[in-house]
Image (spheres, protein in one colour):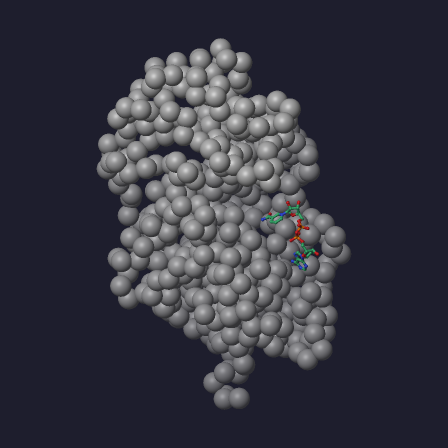
Length: 502
Ligand code: NAD
C-alpha cells in the first residue's frame, strides 16, 4: 500500500460559525443510533449546533395525532434542517405517520437514497453497485385519500401533478449533472396507468432534452426492478414515483449490503430532512447492537447540504476505514472481513478514533471540497410556471353505483341507466373493477357491488346542470351514486382512460 494512503490527513479546521439544525432522536433504536452519530459529529468538530425535538411515540401519547408537537413544527421551519431518527408509527386508526406528514407538509419533494456496495467489508451480491434512487416524495397513493364506497369496495386515489413531476425529475437530472453521473433512468408503469404514470414519463422525456450530456432511458417498473436486482451496474441515477421508489430503494439497499447502511435526504424548496432508510427496529431496541451507519450517512448528506463537505468527507473516510478494519456491528458480521463484533457505541467510538485516517482499499473522498456528492441546492430549482390553460370541455360523466341486486347482471342494469340518460346522454359502457361487463361482458367476470357507468353526451359538450339532472334521474330511478367523475377533453384530447368497447 502506498505511503500516501496511510498518512493521516490534516484535520478539518474548527469553524467559529455553527449551523443550527434540529435533531429528533426518534423511537426504538433511534436514541442509541442518534447518540452514536452525534458523538462522531462532535469528535469531528462538525460546525453544527443541535436543537433537540420530541417527535414520535411521546408526542403521539401526548395527543398529537401526527406525532409532531406545535413547537417542533416551529423549530423545523425556523431552522430549515432536521436530522431525524426512525419513528414508530402506532398501529390502529387515527394516527398519521410522522415521516409522511413531514415530507408532505414541508414540501420535501425529492427523496434521495444512495445505495453503494462496500464489498467485501459489507457483503453484497453486487460488488461495484453504485445507484442513487430519487423517489418522488409527496404524491401518488401517499396522499392517503381512501374511501370505503360499498360493502365490498374500497378505493385509494393516485394523484400525480405536472408541477410535482417536473420538480422531482429536474432534481434527479441536476443531481446527476452535479455529481458526474452518466445516466438517469425513469421507472413507471405507464403501459397500464397511461394518464398518471404516463404524465411522469412524458415530463421525464421533456426534461431529459434539457440535459443532452446525460443519457436518459425509461423502463417499465416491473422489468426495471428485475434488472436492478440482477444487473444494478446498468443503473446510475433512478427517478421514479413515490410507491415504486419506496419499495425499490429498500430492495436496492439490501442488494448493496444492508438496510442498516442506507441513508436518505428528503429535500424541498427551503427545508430538508435527513434520516436512515430503516425503521425503529423494535426487535433490537435498547440492546446496543443497531448499526448507526444509515443515520451517520444521512448526517453526512446533511453536512454536504450545509456546505460542510470537508467535514463530511473526513467522517466518511474514517467510517470506511472502520469497516475495513473489520469492526462490524452484528448485521454486517461475515467470515472473511469481520474481525470483531462491536455494539452501536463501540462502533461510533471506533469511527471517531479513526478521524484523520482514510480507507486503504475502498475509495476515499478528498477532503478539499471537491469529489464529494452534492445535493443540488433547492433554491437553484427554477420556479415552475403554471401550465398554459387548455380548452377544457366536459363530454360526459362516470357515475359509480352501489348496486347489489341478486344475480348482479349488467344486462339488467343497462336498460334502467339508458332510460335515465335521456336524450342528452348515451350509456357508453358499464365496468366492474375496471372490467367491461356491458356491452358484451364475459360470464367469468367476478362482479362486485361497485359499478362504473359511463355516460357520454350526444352533443359537443355538456354543462353542470345537465350532469346534475342526469344524477337526479338516477336517484329517482332508485339508484345510489357513490361518486362521479366528470369526463373532460383538453384541447380536444381525451382526459380520461378509455373504456374497452367505447
Ligand atoms: P425496520 O427497518 O425497523 O426493521 C426491519 C429489520 O431490519 C429488523 O429485523 C431490524 O432489526 C433490522 N434493522 C433495522 N435497522 C437496523 C439497524 N440500524 N441495524 C441493524 N438491524 C436493523 O422495519 P419494521 O420492523 O418494518 O418497522 C418498525 C417500525 O419502524 C414501524 O413502526 C414502522 O412504521 C417504522 N418505520 C419508520 C421509518 C422512519 O422513521 N423513516 C421507516 C420505516 C419504518
